Image (cartoon, rainbow, N blue to C red; front, side, top):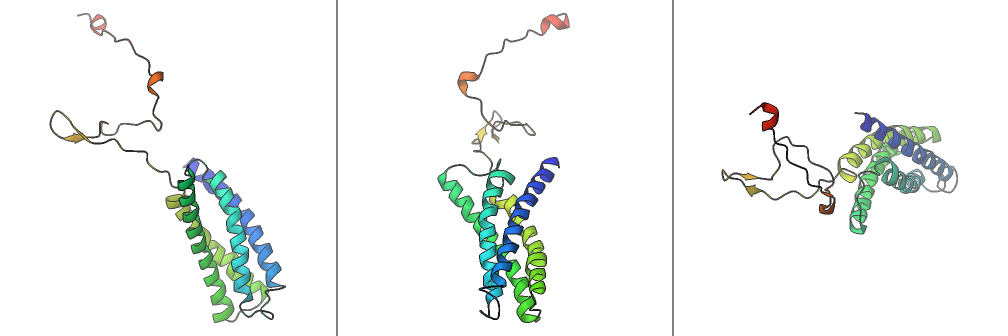
Length: 192
């Protein structure tokens, strides 16, 4: 439970930085060049730009800090992880955009405050829950190592070589580091 709480705390810190970036850029654009008086769909465009910048910052923080121990290694795996992260982040952005669209265009709440509440409070809360769940279970999920091939045992039943309930090491010891252990003759301790 403790690792989950630590991970959730780091996710919150990274998200907090992303939130500040998102809100600052959104409001700067919403009040200037993308104001609804200048561009009709300005609030939506401002949200796309601000969230995209925040996603880039969150990618770095989550990849290297929040989920750093489970991130994928290698160029191809990192590219796949980046694509997965982008897909989940766009999904979270669409949740925020949907909240903003409903509030601004469907319900007619067009003030700066209403736009901030719909996109940066309600949309952010729903999008954050969506993103954390998918980052943890899909994008940055620990990947199992290669599985041992099943071998038939003396009874003819296939077995992977590990006994049921055995704890397996996460990393294999190189053969040159394995040391022989002397056998113990237990007959001397039983008095035989």
